[in-house]
Image (cartoon, rainbow, N blue to C red; front, side, top):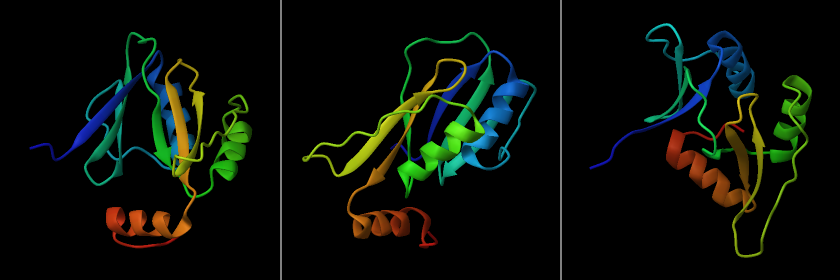
Length: 132
């Protein structure tokens, strides 16, 4: 039985990496168990680990669900100076999405539900409230 998950990205400098991910996620880490490592619980039971170490090429993307992909893209272009990225959609896919990289080459991205009533139901199911 699987009941939790973690995904780890590597950065060459934990101070810079932690600061970058704090800006991305709009908050400090939930857990810093030791030097060179920081963790955020993104939703209950789902953890993002940022670890200082040897960079691994070709991972990801880790895509995060957002309620306004354009606003989040614009925020990160300004706050983190990431490259402007295209937002994609296909008629058979219920979300639009975009991919970008962090300064260490980790592939990240966002997705947004096209059907806002489905989005509200997903949020309610996952976190129990709807505060958008």
